[in-house]
Length: 414
Ligand code: CA
Image 1 (cartoon, rainbow, N blue to C red):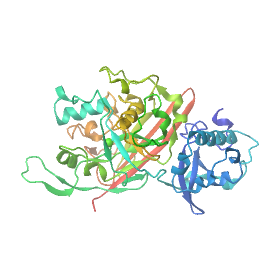
Image 2: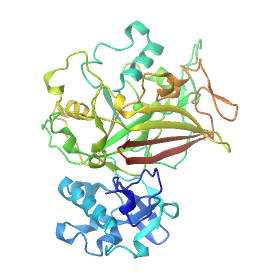
Image 3: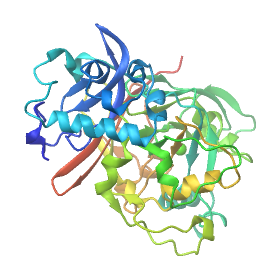
């Protein structure tokens, strides 16, 4: 199966190849929110496709396709969701498909509005890139003790806010906050002066556990439906003052953006790779077998108002020290239950080289090494009216599977 077998045209290097088939929620002037899949520059309206009867033999409640979120569809379980994905792939490569020639089923992406794909019930953010944790520890503490004693023994994480997670394209105002300026005697209240992005990926839970149930690294990925790109905005000056002793709070909760298409774990299988060697032996419940890291190229660009973008970071999801199976196993080891629609995030994804750091804090080294933009200006952090764009894709043996982008502008403080 190749892109040329598909009767919807797929441009070269499209993220939305015949091998991808990611799920999202869209609407247009004619229709309310519904499930779609991205193919090339188009979207296949799955709610309308269902009316042709191609899913009837799968025997499930097809009203899930007109829900405003993917949750009821995901809740059907992988047996159904994978069968739906396979059916669509088969029809798109069938020259005699019942769907072909029916113009109302295929719409151009530029003519639709994408919405938050999943009702995110709970949001957990990990801190699983050893390069990122080392960089931050070096800046905030000292290079000799950059990693705290627990870091190599467990995937550190915290519970974030899900209410302020929005989809790509919704701009956000610079947050207000309380900070303690250097050498000041009193804290001040005002707009954050150090707004930053965090390059992350999130995974969406596809199967619930009950209270008291624990998962193993062998089974954990069966509980993951798919992945999205995530910009986990951070206000560094607010963070620095507020985080002691309980950790991230208002510096993180003002906004997070995700990409609109959820790429399934099945679509990402070709990109499985070995993870970095975990030199410190982990406890038995965190041991794992097989390839649990994913080779997904990631980039971040900053676009100042009315000028061309500058790519400031090239990283890769394969750099993660702790993999998703370990994160999820650790998350459930105390019996805390997970639900369909929960999102777990990687934490900032940094690599070893200076151009692979996943935040401005690291790229501009706490403001000491400003980055040059293509328009001649410099950035230490994100300025008003800057747009931050993140993109990601896997590519192997002619198969490309991508996430599109997550994009948002920082508007001036209200
Ligand atoms: Ca984060």
